[in-house]
Image 1 (cartoon, helix red, strand yellow):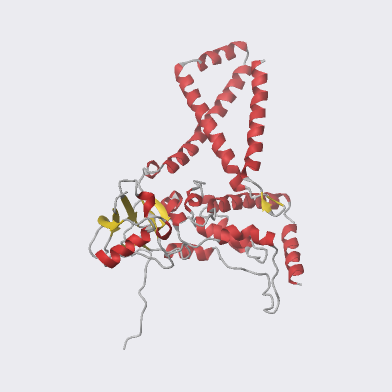
Image 2 (cartoon, each protein chain N blue to C red):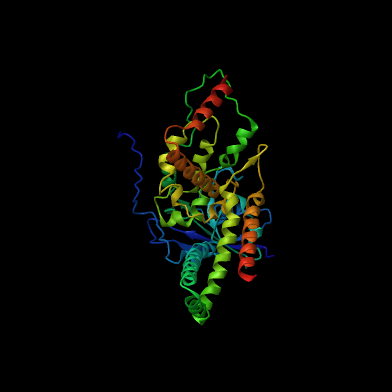
Length: 262
Length: 139
C-alpha cells in the first residue's frame, strides 16, 4: 500500500471545453479517508477550481453522488482503501446520464421535475384535525419504510440504462417514492399517481435490469418497488375487467382510516 | 436598480455537456451484458416453443413424418442451435425464478417472508414437471 493514491478526476469547464478531460492529482493515502476527503484535499491544497457537490459527509443528504471507477457511489461513503490494490488509481467522474454543468456537478432538474409528477407527499382523503393523532401500526409502517429511506441521491438513475436510453422514463427513485406513499396507510393518492406510474414512461418502461437496487446506498430496492407495482397494476386491470362495478378494497381502506382516526 | 431576475435554466442549455449513450453500452459492464443475455434468452425460449410445435405436427402426420423430423434434428446445425437453446432456456429459467421474489412482497405475521420461500416452490414445480416429462419420454 503506497503513501499516496492517484485521483483521476473528470474536469469540464463550460466556457472552455467541448467535453470533459481527466486531470490527475496525487493525494495522500489515509485509510480513514473517503473519496470526498481526497477531493476536499485537492480543493483545499492543490486546485481550488475543482467543483463538486457535497454537504453532510454521512450518506444522508445524497448530494455527493459520483461515478467512482465506473460505479455510481456516494463519495462520502466510498473509502480510498477499497481502491488501494487497483494500481493505486481511482477515477472520479460525474454521474452518468445527467448533463454536466461543471467538473463533477450534474444538472438534476429533470429528475426533480419527474419526482414532482408522482406526487411524493401524503394525499389524505380529508385533512385530519391537528389535535388528533393519525395512528399507524408497526406493520403499516413496515409496509413502506424501506422505500422511505430514499435520499434522492440519483445513483439509481446513473445505474439504469433505460434512463440513459429513454429520457422520458420516470425512473427508479421517483417510482419507489410513489410506492412509499401508495403503501402508506394514511395516503389516499394512489389513484392520482396511477396516470404517471401505470404508463409506458412509468413502470412499463422498466426492463428490470436491477442495477438501481444494487447501487442504492440506502437499500431502498427501487427495482422491487417497480415490479411490485407492475403486479398490482396488472391485478387492478384484471379486477376492473372482471368486476367493473366496484372496488371493495378501497372502501375497506377508507373505513380503516376512519376507525384509526377515531 | 433593476429588479433581481433569477437565471433561467432551460432544458436545452447550450453549455451543459450531454454525453451520448453508446450503442455498445451493454458491453461496458458485466451486469448489463447479463441483462442483455437474459433478454436474448427469450428468443431461444420462442425457438424451443416453435420446435416443440413442429415436433407435435410431425407426430400428428404419422411415423414417417416423425422419422424425417428426427433425422432433421440430428443435422449438425440443429444440434448446435439446440445446445444453445438449452443453455439459454436454463439461464432464462434460473434468472427469472431468482427475480420472482423481488416482484412479490409477501408478508406473514407482519414480516416479509424470506426470498427463497418464493423462489423455492418455482424450482420444486420445475424439477417435478421435468421429472414427469422425462418419465413420459424415456419409459
